[in-house]
Length: 220
Ligand code: FPP
Image 1 (cartoon, helix red, strand yellow):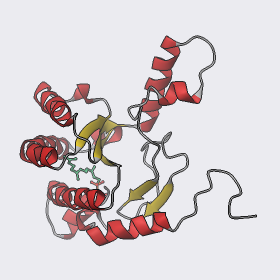
Image 2 (tube, rainbow, N blue to C red):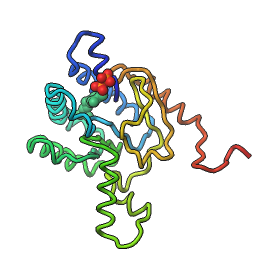
Image 3 (cartoon, helix red, strand yellow):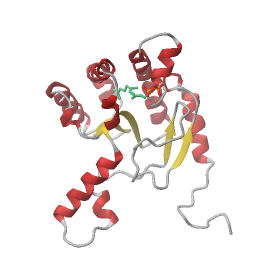
Image 4 (cartoon, rainbow, N blue to C red):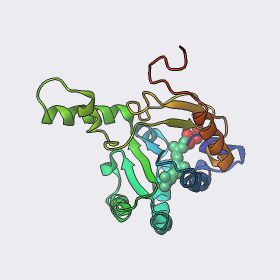
């Protein structure tokens, strides 16, 4: 969800105003994801690298997460959305941690859209965590399934489509293991401007891409 800061800067607003507007785009794509039968969507909301930002912005983001949980929990439940967190939330304040845990619990029986929120997430530390956990419970060489079974995304399918807004064409330490065969979709639109139409365009791109997973299908 890149581009919130630039969206705000263009309007001479503080960066947090861009993040607040970004919440509206989240609402739009959650609705679209449900409409178009997407089973799982993951939002990259806060990376392990985002701690390097000014404390004013970090505090603003923490407040935004907390307020969003307060105001959106009922809507998430009514819409049958199951929320899970990817990342290490033990670094957050006790208050925010318990709000997050309560949200996970309250939505845990939901059967509709799986909504993952990546918070204090970094793919490299996730992979290291998984290797350490797997090697503790197994002697001998690790297999791929030992590792995938210890990622935050265990029991979830690999990523089919990765969308990055805001014009940069990079992965920024996001789900590096899980995107091995993903289709990558980069658009210039800043996240607060991301619309239902942009999401549908991304889904069309995905639908029209022949997936090969390393074999020659389509070439012979
Ligand atoms: C990247 O844009 C965006 C973020 C670091 C934060 C995204 C968070 C939200 C939209 C709020 C999410 C809330 C919930 C409850 C999931 P940037 O700041 O790097 O933008 P820039 O590249 O234009 O500076």
